[in-house]
Image (tube, rainbow, N blue to C red; front, side, top):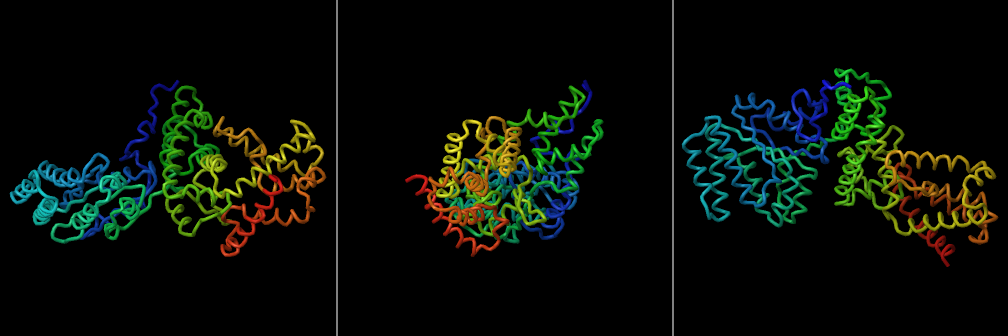
Length: 496
C-alpha cells in the first residue's frame, strides 16, 4: 500500500492553476491578445460545455499573473454571476468589488471615493443609479486604471436579466464608451447572443465580443496529462493511453475523475487498472453525460447529434454540425465520418438513441420489423432462434456477431441500462437480410415478391445511414419523402 503517494488529481472538479494546469497555450494566447496585451483591449466570450476548463483557463491567464497586470495598472476582478439574484445587486457589486480591490491596493483617489458614495446611495431610480455607476468608472479611468471583469457563470444572465434589455445595454455601454470603458471576459456554456435570445430582451451586447470556444484537450495536452502519472511511478504504456482515450477522449473533467480513481486503486493495490476504476466512477460519468444531454436538448442539438452519428438525418443543417464541432462534441475523421469525443460517450449516445423518437414513422417501422421477425422466428425455431438460425443460415452469423459485440460493449459500459434484446442492435439492412434469408416464412406476411421489398430495403438502409454517408442533401430530401411512403407501406402490411 502506497500511503505516502500524493494523488495528482485530488482536487478534481475545482479551478486548477499553477503546475496543476495543463497546456491550453493557444487558448491562453487568445485571452492575452484580446484582453491583456492591447492598450485598448476588447471583450472576450469564452464558450464551452460545463467542466471543460473555462474557469481554470481564465484563472491561469488572468489571475495567476495578477501582479504583472497590476504593474501595468490593469485590475482583474472575478465575479460569479450565479451568486446574484437581482439586476440592482449585480450592478452595485461592479462598483463595490472594484472599490474594494482598489482600496486593498491603496489606489483610491478622492474622486473615486466620492463617485462610489454617490453610486451606492439608496432608493435611486435605475437611470440615475446607472449614470452614477458610469461616473464611478469614469473616475477610475481618469486615475489611469484599467478594469477587467471576469464574469463567470454568465449563463445565469438568462434569469438575472429576464425580459430586461436595459441590463445588457448597460453592460454594453460600460465596455463601449471610451470615457469609462471597462473590459469583460464572460464564461458561459452558451454564446452571449444565445443568452440574450433566451432572455427575450435582445440588445447588441453580443456585438462587442469576440467568441472563443474551449473544447477537449488535443493530443499535446493529453501527453501532459499522462505526464502527471509518471512521477508517482506509473509506467504510461500505449495501452493505458488507449484506455484513457476510450473512456474520456480529451475531456478534462472526465480525465481527472478517472485519473483520480485509478491512482487511488494503485495506492491500495499497486495495480493501475483503468477498467476497474471506470466501473467504480460509472455513476459520475453517467451523471455528467445526462447533464450534457439535457443541455444539448435545450436547442434540439441532442437529437441532431444522434442523427449525425447514427441516422436517420431528419433536420440537420451544416451550421448545426459546425456548432457541435466547435464545442468538441463531434470530431471529423479522415474518411469523412463523424464520431463524438470518446468511444464511451458514443456508446452512451447509442443507448439513448433507442429511447428517442427522431422520426416517428421510421421508429414505428423499425419496431414493427423487429417484432415480426422475433415472433416468426420464435414460432419456427423456438426461444433460441438466433443460435439455430446462425447454424442453418451461415451468412447471418456475422450480423449477430456484430450485434453481440455492440451489446457486450454497452453492457460493459452501462450494465443494466444496456438492452438485453440482441435484435435491438441490428440495422435496417440487417433486418431485411434476415427476412430474405427466411423468405418462405415471411412471404405470406409481406405478400409481394422479394424484388419489390429489396428495392425498399436498399432505400431505407440508405436513409437510415448517419450524415457522413448522405452528402447530397437535395437528393437525400427526395429520398426521405419516398422512404416515408415505404414506411407507411410496411406498417400497413404488418399492422393491417
